Image 1 (cartoon, rainbow, N blue to C red):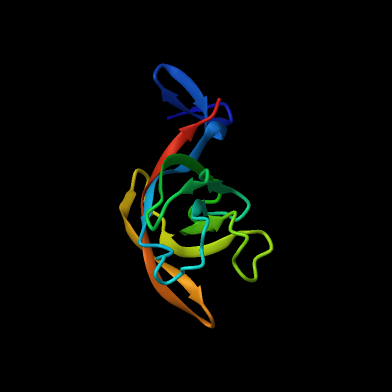
Image 2: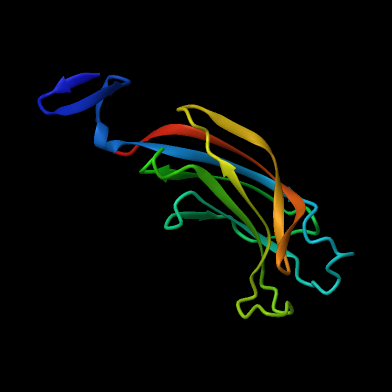
Length: 162
């Protein structure tokens, strides 16, 4: 690193990149969910189309396209969420598995039902990563029930925007 008259710069492959263009980002690879929306428990669900929504900051969501799946929807999607205030305000990745276009569910006017969610602590160091199978919870009446899992990986990286 060099100090270049009031601005800090980094040298990357013989180029000079302003620090203002370097951001921390959470690289996500979302594979699949398993054991959600069991037809023997939820026999009246006819449309089994699922979408996954993740966020660190509620104003910046990443979502997958809807896919059809019985118990185990597969997304194989990847994306990056920029972390502008890491680590002060960003500590968890919030994940929700949604059943979409499901108009026969009682109480939903939008056709969207949360079938599972989880909060996963973010990696705390640069280039840190978490890979795993994370247990989902589902709202049931006044409480919650463990039901299903999500398989994903997240990696904390530097990203350069020029």
